[in-house]
Length: 408
Image 1 (cartoon, one colour):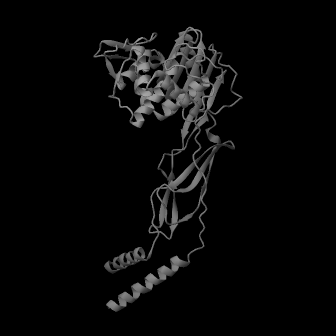
Image 2: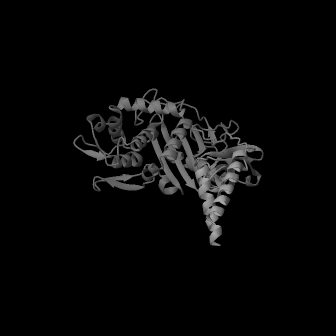
Image 3: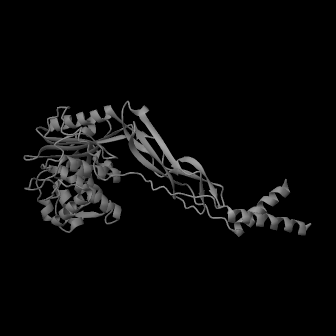
């Protein structure tokens, strides 16, 4: 009986080996598809320089936060004084320093005589005291404290000038071609200039990659120094506009009144930048008009979730018979309201794939279109790894199947 079983097993193994060795009719074509992500803003000349909302500011732009698509704008590249909206870049560098481990929220920041001497908005730092990064962020984001941002700049850049060099280098990396920073706080200086376009770009970078900043930019009222220093947000939209997430105000005699305002509703996140508004009230009303326009006319549609199974693909020469193709990232796109019915998609995915397969390996793509115009392409990747079958794994599989038959 034992000889009989061994003979059958050897026959099965040899036949399986022959099958795997000569099953070579399958060809796997790798599709070079990936999610299209842009770090710049997507400009549509048809909607620019047409101030049909009759805004009173000198320059304005509205963008969708994730894609950077411009939904409204005029004079978006005009170089203007940014005032304290400058601090969006300062906050971005602070958040990047936190991410890199250069500092923590508990790191104590000293105050130099230079920082203590800053005018404008401040919390009257003293050279004998230190504040944590957490408190510095709170003071900068809520009351636009010039003394605090200079103290942070000196700590991170060695000197304020060193930090300004970092600001300009980062601006160049982001494609902020209208920008030249001369300081970290925004007080008027010759050639300290930027544009509504560039403010939107750095605001997008801050909000998308450092969402924790909204824990500070959405504070309405708070305090420092054990309650001795009261804080009240300079951005009135935090209290008055539904879904507001920030971001930064600024005003000087040259700049007039500026604002980078961000808000999120029903999965749609927008950034509205207003520059050179004649009054503080007008900058808030203009920003509200921009945000209202965006939320009324656009939606952000999600067609699946990252890691969600799209389809099972047959595996040849593998220890498993199938592998799941999943979304590499969530397919989400900005859609104008009323056009949802025009969305179509095309999947490019082979029916089978040959082992070995690595987890996250590209298997195919799905391309989404709206009325024939491409919205974007999302990669489909392997949910798990599948090893290539060999003699040992085949033998184990045959024995497992054989003993399962014996039990029945």
